[in-house]
Length: 254
Image 1 (cartoon, rainbow, N blue to C red):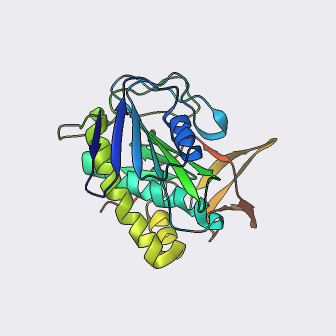
Image 2: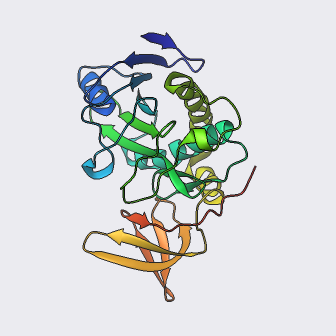
């Protein structure tokens, strides 16, 4: 099934794929530039950050946007925060009365539990950077036994929850609005907005790093997107890691 969204993005829906991100990579390496959303109703080899398995139930959203960001490769990492704001807005639109927050580096929380995850991959193909942005949102299921508690959209929405195709349409609209802000205003504006929606900013958190786990106060986000952790008065810059539960919601309602 194919279609077109208001932003100009194409949309293609498949009954089954190994992975929407792998399909996006294959297309990019064959010369495709997008923008195109690739949606799978079922994935046989879905994956998330650092190759972790991504669990998807029937009715949940598994999609990847293949597109050219119109930015140099050194700025691509900023898109993790741009896309988080887009998905944040999409979730809030579906669950306007529920507490929503962004969780560093690339998750969305709903009621303190993970509702969505993002996977940003730079594909070195052709004349300019092409990006595969994977988006997974729990619409009807809340997977159990994972490292972080999960939520599902149908438990928090007082409106009719859209199906995967309808939800992609909302995500697309919100995402491209933030992409426009990023292109015009740079990362500083994105950083400020992201911090205003961040879970546990100013609170003590635990972060899992390769070979160690550390605790400190979530103090800031620097201009590279690194987490700044205040560890007993010593500020530590963390470029890659995972915030462990429990994590409280501190997001502003809009």
